[in-house]
Length: 286
Ligand code: GLN
Image (cartoon, rainbow, N blue to C red; front, side, top):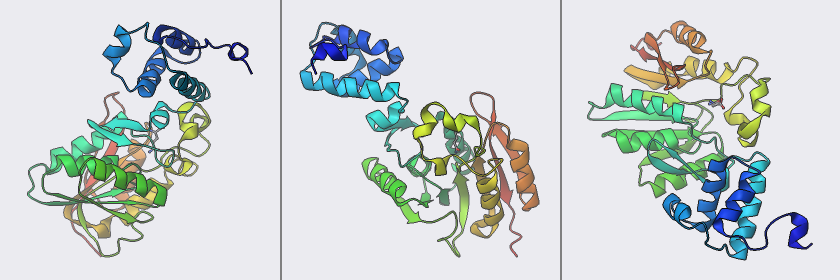
């Protein structure tokens, strides 16, 4: 097929390539993907509208733009997403780290920054974002991270190596492989979307692992399982912090109350939504 039949300029400059892309995807996505292909900074792109693209760069760019147009998330297309100031590798085997999850890191730091040593567990670590951010930011943290998915653990291990974070990774379905182990802090961003939520069939989340997103008819199945199973894995005085959906805070506080937690509270994300709930285990192990 000749190029013209594909309706694309033969060998465009930066300005022409961006104009072609902006007719298909958002302007910011067009620029991010062109920076990715050309391996350049935003300032270089802005200063060189007349720079010619190599045929191979142009072919790669067109492919990425068409994949983005079909809905693939930018983070998967460029293979990376920033979380808590660190660059994480991401693949379709893991949920793309989201800014609201930084609240879990902030709460952990607020409660434990003064401790000389703290055993931390991240349940369902995915890309490793939470576990690695905590290992980097919390002095004295001894971090274990589990995931049921081997593919996710491979991504998380690559991130820990790349970011020089010391984290122990274990393949485990929630607490399944952690018999007898206790922690001062347990964090989780489990799946919490209702399985029939139309949101799952729209936009970028269609490309993310369903097992990282959906959790039963009300989205509460995994949250309930984690809360019920956590107490024997918490040291007396230890904390459990869970991310949840925008309308689940009261239900999660109820689960924590039923399981015997104290100091139960919910915290708001930057959008003002109650996004994390947690409680303290005071040590009535039985
Ligand atoms: N907040 C995510 C979303 O709505 C869901 C993340 C999760 O289930 N842990 O896409």
